[in-house]
Length: 305
Image 1 (tube, rainbow, N blue to C red):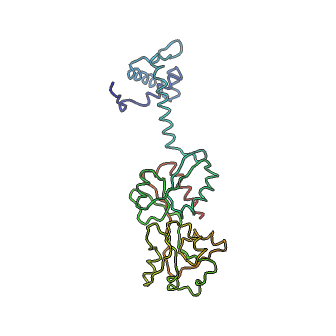
Image 2: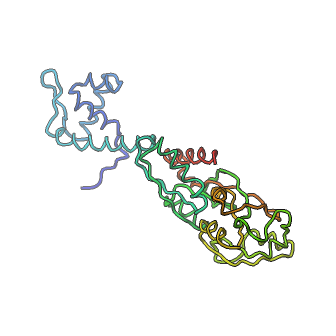
């Protein structure tokens, strides 16, 4: 048997069948569907043609289903219910009851700054929502978003991929940190030359020893000694507090550690440009209700950071 051409079938006919099956009355079915009785009778006629069966026969005051109608009714009901559920799920998102899992592309830094506050808020408004944090390389972020492997990405995106949308969240800047009681660093004597001579630690994902601060120093014909490179940003406060190394680090990362009497924050003797931490998502999910909620909650959380 060949496949039925669904484009030639009016979905409203299946709805009419469902209501007729439940009401056993053309008049009552017409009222439920806000149709005139002639329109409902016409729908029944088209159903009979479609299924090549009377489907409903008047016996007494009711339209009783035929054997054919009894046979197809469960399948039609299940199909219409699936369609309704699909349409409802695409149009509504209830964070208070949802058990949805969101995947967020995030580095150590953005996870440290954003996620604790995100979980605190969601504990109140969306207690069953789950999150997966996924590290990413910037060259692959467009593919990850397009393939729905992540819902949003957080970070600094100087050249965002095509078919993505970017929203700024908060501005960040560099500060210097050293251990409390460091023998060299004082605000009065810190110069670019003094700073460059100090052994330093560098966070980098590129497996090299060149950071943003090196570009600024190079403009003054200075070069620093990078004694340690690491792809793990969060170890730097511990490393610095137990050595004479210094490092340059985003300001929001170091503030809590400086309160433990082990670190000091110092102003850099060279000028560095602040940068914007943004949220990136695919145009493919721009109208998705769950994704809209996630972006709104992240934006709200970041306003208080």
